[in-house]
Image 1: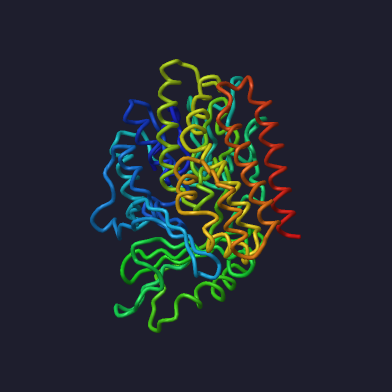
Image 2 (image 1 turned 90 degrees about the vertical axis):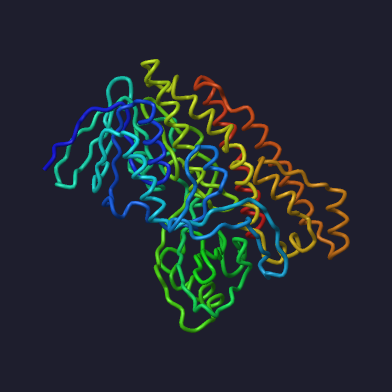
Length: 461
């Protein structure tokens, strides 16, 4: 058995999309990189998700987009349907739909080819190791079963929602456990229909259906055509449905949409996604967190592939600067936090309020909001791309009066706008250094506790 190297500039835990991108760009800048993953090499890339990747990420990273048998289809954007499916909002943004395994394998092989020093599969990160300055490596269990300490100047954790390293880190800055209210339980099937079948929704768009009263409490249904006959169909719901998610999915999602005979289920799987704004701090002395481990998932749509890839790239750039400065403390790594919050953190924080608003809103109100264009395509697109929402309340009042009078709904929309503006202002003033972080975090925690209390209490009563 080959004895692993023990000392590196950067150790990256997790060879998913964010981890492989971090490894690739760190190695390309001349850093000595160790990449580890708990899975066997041939299985890396398999993950429960919608399999859609925003096309813009490939231009941002200057890497090749999916092609050949890795690319299944190209979509024009998303359609968000009301619970009764009679109205919808359209967001136009190109997406690649990929064969998740082939896409993951390509990113892994490109990371290895970029010159990383060591890749270890079937290797589990057990814990972090420390020196007097902070994190200085990880303890791992190798595929042989033996335990070793791998040392590094910086650790990048890309090990997912239930990251062992995040949950056990000795830190006053990092959130160890993601609150259950910010977790969504997912289950999906990839289904092949007979060639003569007609798809339920438009082949050119990804369908999201919100139905908090019945079919998707706490989340949404997705219906993503990967080709003319293959569909990724799934359900995201509250974490407390853990014991019954498969049955719930079968009854309220699968049996409703898949009515054609002679279908073939290619694969079935479940998992948990953090659906919220990013961690308040995604870094501490000697360590950065990326992807699901840092809650880098868009709360508006559950998409995490392109966001995780962005975070992996940013972490690699900051790691290089830290190595040049010979300073791996939070003072240097704080730049990673600042970049994350300016790149997508503010947008995700704003989307997080919409997520909470929709999660607990009665389905009849959502039908009304979408049907009457109280939230329009332009509103949702501004939120999606810029983290902005600017409802015209004169027009909104007219729309509400035109329908059934709903003063409660109007008050809730005004509260939504107030909290949206407060959150945007707070995130625009994310601290430039750790020195002022404590005060900012107290304000952020207080504000979101108020938001949770407002929308959850109001809409469950």
